[in-house]
Image (cartoon, rainbow, N blue to C red; front, side, top):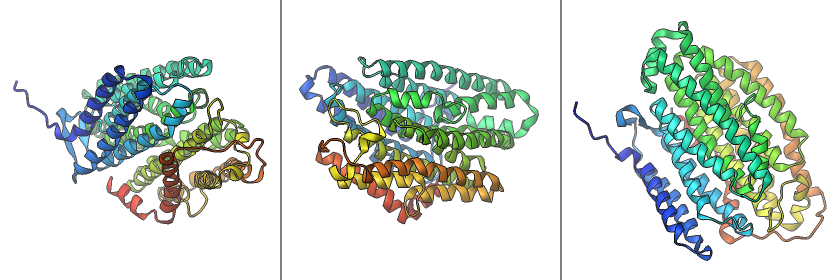
Length: 477
């Protein structure tokens, strides 16, 4: 049997990230604490370089290499650029926070880069084996990041919970993959799709494999009833790590759902649609109701994430290209909003002080009017207020759901969106109408100020003109 050398061109971004992550790891060993900024800058060069390589190498159509294990397509390119840029923003916002807490170590950036590599592999997974490899690389990086602050008991507890539940979810996913392999005789997602189309819903092993896969995927997304890890991990992890977990991995999880359910098990859509409807409805109901009573802003944003995941699933469960494009648009805009919101929390978290409670935002308008305005835009957008990108993202998803004939589900989503607006507006009320308890000045470096400004203004700009991004998402399908 002749060995065919695969085409390495499509995986250049992954090779670049992997090589640079290893380089940062080696260089960091020889740096003193005062030289740690070199590791940070190399990490930023890696992420921006990867984004440029992806854009430069973009081609129309679909490229499959490594014997079907790797897929390069428009959806993958869009998501990878989103992952690279959002992680670059995460590193930028985290820099001062880590320095203040003496956590500014090269390991943070190395783990972050290996997490990005795992996400890129997940996005381009052409087989169930690649899916699992990418997922485990990301998960192991996240477990270590959550426990990054060794002196914090809450961080260690959050990491342990995340590790135990994550291992359970990975086991479920692996068991589902083994059942699919048993039923179809292949790990290739396209081959699985062909066999699933032939056998249909008559093969019980295939259907049971689907159930286990959805359990694993729902955990990674944080959908109800597999959400139990999310609030504790968001609250317990250092805010810089919460920012990382709450942003780019959501794009990778979206890609995973599309690759497995749509491309691999599209023939079983009547089966997985019912399961996704239940999870989406429960996520929107529980996420919004529980968020209303939260006083810790990280927990509030965790339950807010659960409700947003419900909306994200709405587009996917329609089974239409319009729905998939709307969900992709929602995923990208959600990450943009989440990065900005946690970025503001990090900027307010001064040395020796964590801005974790809603009370800590009292009178922010008096201390920093511009930062208060940025937080206003982000909260209003998450609530789905018109003329901001969050409104258009929700509208696009709801239109797809109504087109699929699930009007009752769209009504449920609207009702709980209105309920959800309450807790976002409560944060705005505290920022603008409550008096500050102290007169601590809000300080941030110039590049951080520029980044958070662009972050907030993008939410407004994309809300006023969403057509360009929406048409880009439509080309992915």
